[in-house]
Length: 250
Image (cartoon, rainbow, N blue to C red):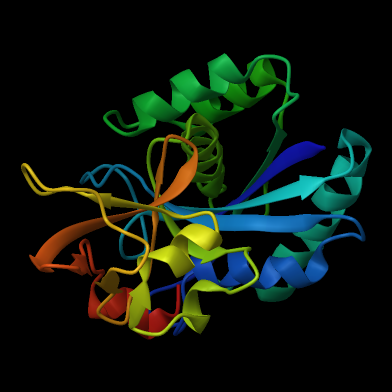
C-alpha cells in the first residue's frame, strides 16, 4: 500500500463563496479504482505582508491510500483536470503530488518547515520539489500556488500540524452529532486528548461536545481531538474555527 499526498493551493478568490478546502474534498470523487481517502488536511501557512493570499493563506492536502505508486501519473492527470474544472478565475492554483516512497522527502519537509516562518519564492519551491523527487506544477495566474502546495505537502507528511476538514472513516466528520461518545471517535481511529492540567484520560463512555465543528488535528500522524473537561465524563473540543471557514465550507 502506498500513501499519496495531493495538495491544492490558491484555487479561490475573496468573493467566490468557497475555499480551496472544498475543492480538495471534492477530489475524492475523482480517485481511481482501488484508491481510498484517508483524510483531507488543511495546513495554515505563513501570514506576512509580503505573502499574497486570499483570506487565511492555507492549503489543503488530500491524503489517500493506493495499491501502489504506479497510480501516481493517473492521480496527477486527474488532479490537473480537477483544477481546470473548479479553480476560480483570478486565482493562482498550484498542485503538488508526493508519495511516502518519494526518494528525498527530507528535502521537502525542510522546505515546509521554512515556509512556516520565512517568505519563500517559487524558485525555492521548485528546487525543493525537484530535490525530493515529487510533482509540482502551476495552473494559472501568478503561479504562486506552487509555494503553498509544496509546503502543505511537506507539513502533512511530517504529521505534526494541520487540521482535518474531512476524514475517510466509515462516518465522515459531518456525520457525527454535536455531542458524541469518546468511544465512537476512537472506533473511527481518532484519538481524544485532554489538554487540561492533571486530568484523567477520556473514557469510552464519556461525551465530547464538538460545538458543531468536529475537526481533529494531525498530531503524530494521527487524527487527534484536543478537549477540555467541563464536568465529570464531559468534554469540549477546542480550537473551533471562525465563521468564515464555516461559511465557505472548507
